[in-house]
Amino acid sequence: MSSGNTDDFVKGNVLSNGVALITLDRPKALNAMNIVGCLIREKLKKGNVTEMLKGCVWIRIELISLKYGADMDIKYKSFLDEWEVDPKVKCVLVESSSPRAFCAGMDIKGVVAEIRKDKTTPLVPKVFTAEYSLICKTSEYKKPYICFVDGITMGFGIGLSGHGRYRLITELVKTFCTPTATTVGTDAANFLPEFESLLLVELSSAIGLKEFSIDGGSPPPPYSWKEDDDEDSGDRTVLAMPENGIGLFPDVGFSHIAAQSPGEGSVGSYLGLTGKRISMPADALYVGLGSHFVPSGNLGSLKESLLATTFSEDPHQDIKSLLAKYSSNPESEPQLKSLLPHIVSTFGGNKSVTDIIKELEKHQQSTDTAAHKNRENDLSRLSGVMKTEYHIALRSSLRNDFAEGVRAVLVDKDQNPKWNPASVEEVEPSEIEALFKPLDSGIEELA
Image 1 (cartoon, rainbow, N blue to C red):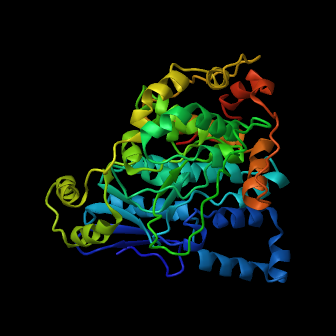
Image 2: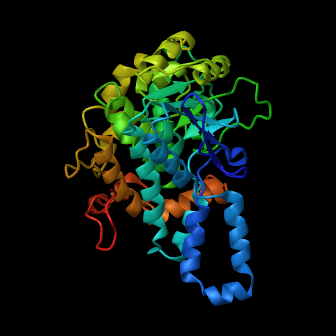
């Protein structure tokens, strides 16, 4: 039996019937992945060990390591590696210890602090290598991989769940802040007349358009959600890729999901460029972020049945039989499906960002920032997508916009980042091209 320490944020156990259970247990941080181990190791390499020992710093570091365990993503992947070759393990189930969040992303403030000190820090490739390697592992896993996506799920949380075989989504509600002037109900027919206005608000937030508002409305803070102490209030699952709001980009393989979305990828482009939150289970299934809808009230019974299952030679068939019993169709149709013609006309056809803004604002832009097409890696497979994203992530994370975005959203929380360049018109195409160039010597490619 594999097991994490009682204080570990990622716990792993193999049950007697062959279900291997991963529990994310960092509820105060909404299960955001920590990087304390990487930070400690880098500080040890730079520090004078003798002086550290004299000051008893080493003892304190050891205590920190014992309390927080290994980096969560490294611990998580070690469980998957071990269980993939263990014949006793029939499937892997991933859940959260808290109903409030599945995983809210990665704890990035420490990374930004190190980048501010030294832009050549080896911490950056180490963090993204560990993160992206884990995502590839979930996609290519040789045994059934099941995620209970119940609660807030953002960024790396989508990376952990969105590429696995069984992505079980519960009911979703609008707990994120929305623009006051463009708040709409779940009736898609009522939503249609305001579609262009809503897109403008969302896109202005994503790309930093200045002095833009609609009837006094303002773009929502990208990493904020409505706090609610009542965990049974029904505010359960929220799916979002808000990386644009902190000066990064929608990574964790989201472009792979987006490319397979309806409208020949137009829906994915819409979600990626605007940071739009998915607020209905039908939409999550429509986009591909979920494979099955399981009402949250059924999760406990599904888990009990899974743990009581005597698996056959075909665990996939056993799991499908259980899902047929506990999953159901969402009550409503996908809102995004009703909006598909509008989304395709605005975001389809490999339009540039400038063309998209022109569609929305109905006026000519002076420069053009086109979507970059990279053919070096096979982008039809997640591994190829992750290699390309790795190049972009290493470069994007060192840009001042990343540190500035984290400051504005997560540190000072003034929700007022000062982007540089400040508008699409000021972006030089060479800056975009540079993100895709081969890595410098000494930096290994993502395996």
